[in-house]
Amino acid sequence: IISDGDPSPPSGATMGQYKAAGIMISTVAIGTHGPAGSTPLQNIATATGGKYYVVTNPKALPRIFVREARKVARPLVYEPDGGVVPQVTYPHEILQGISGPLPPISGFVLTTLKENPLVEVAIRSPKPESEENSTILAAWTYGLGRTAVLTTDSGKRWATNWTEWENYDKFYTQMIRWAMRPVNEEGKFSVASEMRDGKVRVVVTALDKDDQFLNFLNMNGAAIDPSMEPVNDMRVRQVAPGRYVAEFDAAKPGSYFVTLNPGTGGAPILTGVTVPYSDEYKARDANLALLENLASLKPEGGEPGKVIEAPEAVPIPGDASASDESTNEELTNTAMRPLSVQEQIDELLKVNTFREDLPKAISSQDVWHYVLLISACLFFGDVFVRRVQVGFEWVGWLWQWFRRRVLGRDDQQAADTRLERLRSRKAAVSQQLDERRAAARFEPSVDSEQEGRSLDEVITDVSGGAARPASPPRTAPQQSTPDASEDNYTSRLLEAKRKAAKNQPKKDPNQD
Image (cartoon, rainbow, N blue to C red; front, side, top):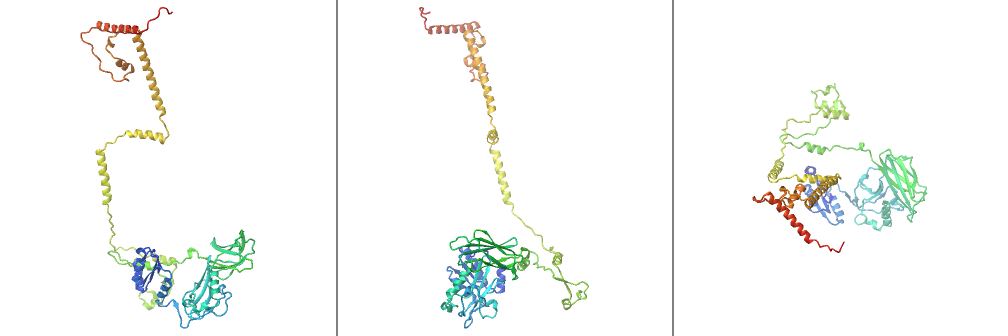
């Protein structure tokens, strides 16, 4: 396992199955983020008897791979005595211009071919005898990319004779160029393919040496479906400057091989498209290992469970050999009737999956923290009610603010009404004061009730109590009589007139 340790480690049950099967796992830690990533990898290697490697230099990976591959029961590295001479089995584009026998090699890595018609094996080894593991050079096209695999090295260990081969540079150059995007000497062609709505769409972008669009090319193409039959309805058309599109129906799932001729005299453009099966055809096998692991769990006070499998066939009714008294040998020869999927489901539904011998499951949950929270809230509320007096004056202010800010209503009309009422009251008070002043100057009257009253008292009576509080009324001496009071009031008025006459300037008799 080569990893940075970020994925979740396997469960204990999985590790137990590895140990029971005698599988040793070696782990290689690359770019781990401290003990959190390296510890799981080290535990996996220790539990299964493998080795744990910490790699800081990528060049150490091949040596680790070779060292671990030698420990496998069937070595993945094949190094026959005397070496082998590779044989060309297919004239691939990578081998174009390379003739003559290939130099011998002393070893290579055993590989297995993919079951895909687009895989092309160009070079094989005469050893071992099984062809599935004797591949030296294989190439295939998948989707938008190309892949080339050379199972030997470049001459440091196994292919040492290749370094002196005259076609050494040409071989590796052509292999690398073939794996790159398709190019042409007269132009640059990039290919993209996609699967949409049951059709394969291949898009080719054509550029010349100066990266200008190549237009009006006589481009045509052909395709082969997974059953190796040609596709007849493929047509290439230009849809934009330098862009060509080919479409064809893809009714069969699998790999389609597409060849496009740019029409410029150059090499054809090869690509492949893989059409997957529909989701309803995907093979989804049951995870029996997980089911058996779950069934083996023993509940408290009970027994482990078991995995119930649906019968694939049942004895034919009426067969004498299917009676209860039949022996095992007779049951083996009993005629059986296979069951359909629905019948297998019905047989499974007949099984009672509920077990009544288990004790009742009881689950308890602490609630003290909820009670403590409620008690604290009640205590705070009780102290608040007892110690804090809450007034409601703020409700009116809040309502006024709500009317102004939210409802957009102003109390200007009410304020205008109050001001108008105050103006009217002020005018009435002013009129009464003017009348009293006029009566006091020109029509003095003697009133026993007004005797001894100050100006503040008079203003208070006129304004209806709006003035400042009046001082306590002064009481006249008991020995005074009404006549004396009247004389005093009259004398004060006369004295005031005398003073006013003295203060007036004398009139010149010569003036008119």
